[in-house]
Each structure stands twice: as C-alpha cells, then as structure tokens.
Length: 430
Image 1 (tube, rainbow, N blue to C red):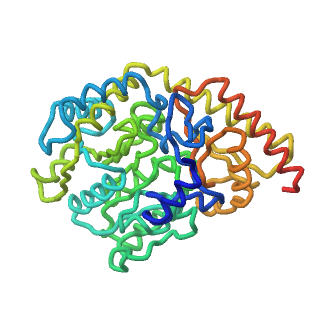
Image 2 (image 1 turned 90 degrees about the horizontal axis):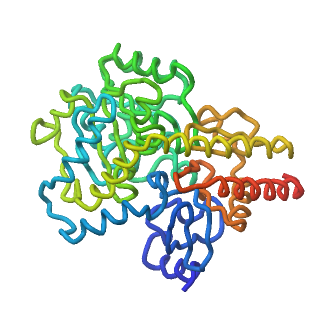
Image 3 (image 1 turned 120 degrees about the horizontal axis):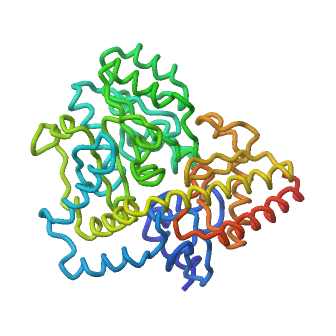
C-alpha cells in the first residue's frame, strides 16, 4: 500500500479524499502523503519515507510525537474505559492546572475542538453582554463556525475561498471585520456600531495567514477599546496557548483577555478544546446560567489524561520553552541569511517557536501584505523541501512548529536543505 493508491481510494469515500481541506495538497500540487507513524521530531509515511516534521499536528505536539510519558499515561487510562458521559477526576485535575496557570481564567469548560471552543466563546460573549456583533480580523482563522467564516485564514485563505457557501447573510451580518495591527480600523467599527458590539476575537499572534506578530501596543489598544465600549476581549489561543509560554499570549504580552479559547494542545494532539475566563463570565454557562452549551464527549478521559500529562510536564520544565524558542530563532536567522545571500524575495516572521517564510519583499504585518506572497513559488519550495526530507505545511499561510524533540541536527539539516532548494529556485529564474 502506498500514498497514491490510498488517495485514489480515499477520493471515492471522502470529499477530496481528506477530512480537512488543506491536507489535500491543493495549494502545493501533487498528492497528499499518508502518515503511518510519528516518533520525536520525525514522521514516516506509508511509502517508507521519513521526514523532519514542522507541522506537529498543527501545533499541539510540543514535546514531540509519541512522547513516552504521554503514551504511557494513555495506555494506563484506556483500561478503565474510553468514555462515560459522566464526570471523571482527570477533568478536575486538568481544569485545576489550567486555571492555576493561565492568567484571568478562573473557570474552564472542556469541549471537543478549537472550533467548538470559539463557537461557545462567541455565544458566551453575546449572552454575557446582551449584544450581538463580534469584531474579528481579516485573515484570522477561528474554526469553521458560521459566524467566523468571514474573511478567514488557514485553509479558507489557502484555497482563495474566505467565505463559505452555506453561511447565511443573517449570520454574517453580525460579524464585523477589522484589519490586523490597525487599531484605528477597530475604533471605527466601535464608532459605527455603538453599543452593539459584544466582543473582539483575535489570534493574539496571527498564525493562519502565516505567522504575523502583533505590533507594539496593538493588543493593549484592543484591551482599552473593549473596556471603553463594555465589550469582551477574546483571545483565540488554539495555537498560542501553552506554546508561547506556559501562560500563553496573555502572559507573553502582559495583556488580559476576558475569554480564552484553547484547542488540541490541551489534549496533547487528541481531539479536544476548551474555553475559559473570569468567574462572573463563565457562570453564565449552563447549568449555572442561560448560555447553553453541551457535549457528550467533552472532557473525554483519554484526551484529558494525555493533555494533563503534557501540561504537567510543561509546567514543571519551563526550560522547554527556551529550547524550542532558540531552535526557532536559529531557523529564522538561517532562512534570512540564505535568502540574503541568494538575493531572493523572502520575508521571515517568528514569534517564540512559530516561524513563517513568505516569498515577498514586503514586511508582512497583516492580511493584505501576506497576500503579496508568491504562492506558486512556495509550492515549488514545499515540494523540493519534501524531496529533501523536510515536511512543511502544504500551504503558504500556515506556521512552522518547533517541538522539544527537534534537535540542533534537525535544524542544520533543514537549513542545508533550504539553502540547496533556494539555490535551485534561483537558478531556475525565481
């Protein structure tokens, strides 16, 4: 069995042959690889090829694939049963760890995905404030809930389909779109929709139109605008949570959010999510309050066990963040050096252990600048790097993720491959 034959079979029984659009390699050409195994910083496909992995299941595999302590904890947990639809001790332990570690999160509700966390957080903001409208930012992706599929990032941006069919005008009209890193665009929306805005939702580090850091005072400016207009500030930390540092973007940037959403990182890569916030806000969620949200598999004991084990390791070994951030810094500097030597139009952004390479001369600071990147050139870069044994995101507009399992040797091999590939692209006239 190989990837090509599996893909032909998959296309007959799954839309596009995949269960998430970007996996189809539509933005980079060719057929997707079917992965058979992950160990540390490496993944292997069913064809027997091994790659240094910079996707890391889109972020949550902070410690590396198949971490022995996490694997052992899961193995022990499954003997007690897979799901009960009833409370378990591990849910409490995980919630206690999160609320004691993340600023301004007094209570947390476990769900099953980042999308579900965002949907619930937006509903909660509306229920708590009694207002209907939400401000989001061009190119920021917050899952595939209807109200968030308006000028979205991630797969929607990659496929040039930022708005989805099936999203009603009635739903979309309550989503207002601002420009990332442009505080005046947010201020205008508040002025034009006085007393109607329930909250502002943002990826504190944009990571679904490529990695774009917030400019100085941008996040603090949002905090002030929300306070001034009695709106809630929602940090979507599906990517940044427990990755920038253990307290996430709130701790990293010193900015308080009212509601925070998390994704698969709190399940060590298993299907899980959560949203949390100040006590008086979270007590509006059923069964205490009138904002309804439920889930049969929420707080699944196996996912909670995996997540709790990973978070516990991270909380007790803060030096992990120094290592992954330093490795990412070496990648950033190496990419910049190679592009400079070859005089290629390439811009590199990094925040912590998140890195993005854009094929543009522009300083990438928002959605408009990200869209100047040459996606055709990225496609060639991706496929050449794949041949060199480097697995990158099959989209220009996604991040590279560094794990604790990545080594100096991995980084050196990656930069050697990049110099070779960029040199080949230069010779071909790009």
